[in-house]
Length: 101
Image (cartoon, rainbow, N blue to C red; front, side, top):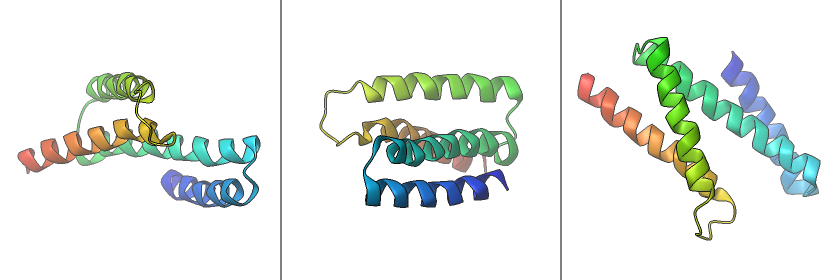
């Protein structure tokens, strides 16, 4: 249910940002996307992969560190370099989960 509410917030925030292009609209776009990433990754690791809380906390800490490193990359991706961490972690989780299936 939380993910569905966040998806609705993403839709509203994205619409606002891409029509108004203001600072508050940008935050309404970015914050729900970030929260969705965090909730999804934690829920996936906990529920689908069956990882314990400490492993989820450790992985989420690594996700934050990866996100900080990716946001500091000197590449021109129009601000999207912060999403590299999500791509990396989804790839790792998919590979790990596939290997355990």
